[in-house]
Length: 355
Ligand SMILES: *Cc1c(COP(=O)(O)O)cnc(C)c1O
Image 1 (spheres, rainbow, N blue to C red):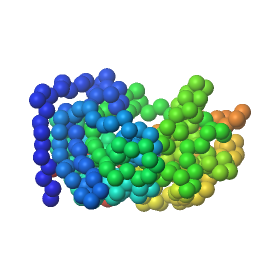
Image 2: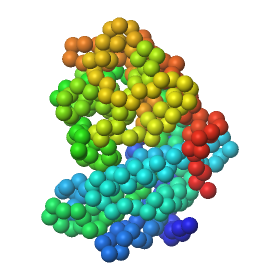
Image 3: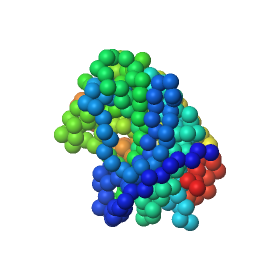
Image 4: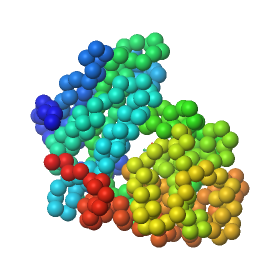
């Protein structure tokens, strides 16, 4: 068990109305900090008032993007208790990201207990309206004051939280997505399987272009042959083709999503044939032409599942399930959100109370 000193904020902010919340703009009263210094390891875990970080302009993170992050949520159950969803999976993935970015490994229990302790302190910030939650953003930055290109010797692990409104306040409307032929998000051998800020920086241009053309998200192709589907926006992607569930396999350029893993487990347990393999854009558009593209959806912590209603690729268009959410997509959404918000039993032991 870890005990973290808590420095309470002098004044507490007013809680916003979850109905008008914009994602990622309002933060809670406190944050968790943990330092790393070479020779000392990770030390001084503590909860302090939410506030600015004081860093020299030469801090390595600003120049070479030695940075990793996670995204997870805390959910208010009907009995009022607050729970996390597969939080150890986030901590393990954070360490996988650290390994790739040459950031020292965090002791798993220390990271998990830091996150839990913060959410416990902030539990009044977890909203209770349907579909709302507290988004948790753990991240690590390289803090050496140095422009030399090498791994930093000092780091800061920080966890901040923001209340988020219901993702589907207006109902679950399928989105239009566009296959991106030019820009790629990640390549095998690169950092695609990690959650690092650099991946997002590289993805912004294509996202803006897709939006200009009236599409909600980019459907990414692989960085080598630009033939295989990898992800949609910052979500994993799944298709139901002729009765089978098909999803890109984890080649190194695809982010191993925890929502993805959870969906695949449910789908297998429901008896669907599940294929994790290379999936070409060509076969999907051909399947759509043949009337065999039954459903398509993205998966991720923010939306849980996000149905895809239409796909564009050059001049080609593919409509999916008449532009409405399909039954498998709906069942995944209902089951996962039921487990996360505690309105349904959790036979897999995926949830963890914060106290
Ligand atoms: C975070 C993320 C996902 C989804 O992961 P979850 O663990 O399901 O939230 C998918 N793709 C990318 C690129 C991501 O950064």
